[in-house]
Amino acid sequence: MKRKALIVVVLLLLFGCTNGTDKNIKKEKNEEFLYFLYATPLADHPIWLQSKEGFVQACNELKVKCDWIGPKVIDTEKMEEVISQGLIEKVDGIITQGVIKKALLEEAAALDIPIVLVDSNIEDGKKFTFYGKNFQRQAQLLLNEIEKKIPKHKPLVIAIQVAELNFKIAQDQIQEIREVFKNHPGGYEIVAITESKSDKIRAQAQWMNTLRNHPDINVTINFAAESADACAEIAQTLNIKKRLHIYGVDDMDSTIDYIKKGYIDASVVTSFYEYGYKTVYQMYAYKKTGKKPTSLNNEVKLLIVNQDNVDTYQSELKE
Image (cartoon, rainbow, N blue to C red; front, side, top):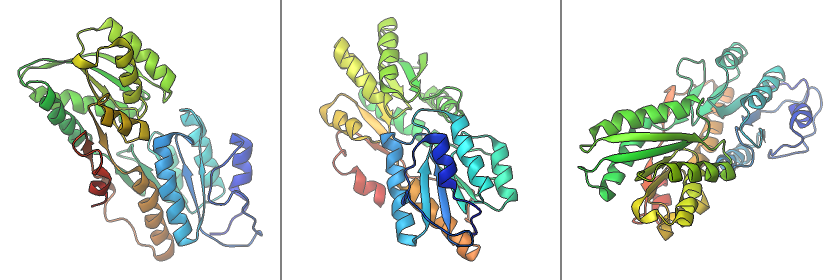
């Protein structure tokens, strides 16, 4: 728990800002305290800020020092810089998305620094534990919901948008769609896959191009948080929502509003808040008592949010 130097100072030089529980942490060289770092993939994205809320809440309850640091746009190299600096300074634990190099997990394990992965896993990496979705379950929820709107005998003509296609999380989600949707009696075809790069303007441009080029599309599946909103807005602009069913993930305020208005059919949601909250408590228990997680891989609860439960789903998530 001894700090050689304050990691915040170095990371301020890298990123120009930090979003921790205490931006002005002061300490003497031999002062001891627990210090947890959340190396977020997106420092200001609304869905990841839900995770920050849980992270900060847990840190405050346990009276540990912590910081939320990462790039504002997708940049895994910068994420890895944050983690590398954290390992150099011997932080007490790190939370991050599993899009980083596996070697960083091995380095952390050698230093007895737990790294908790959230949202995206590194199956054979030496992580402390992982919290994330079961993508097969997610695909099945989506198919069940789609078949409420489109008869089972009718073919599904699908377009998909992800944040970053070369991320394993995107590839895994698409693969599960391919496997699960084989069970649709009318058959299916994926005619387009695009990337949002976690940028809404880009997401809109990609959807405008896709929907103009493929007027036969009847289902869009959006695996980036901002993409369903972007798709819904383009569908309104093109006046094609009556023939187009739009599905997303996550529960940004705008997504929930669009579900209420009927612009988005449904979204698969989980608690990003818990990604931040539960992981802090696990790392704290390990550092204080040596207690390790009972499982390396922890599935989080998934819900379909549609117009039927849009006003009650939050209580369902907490059950």
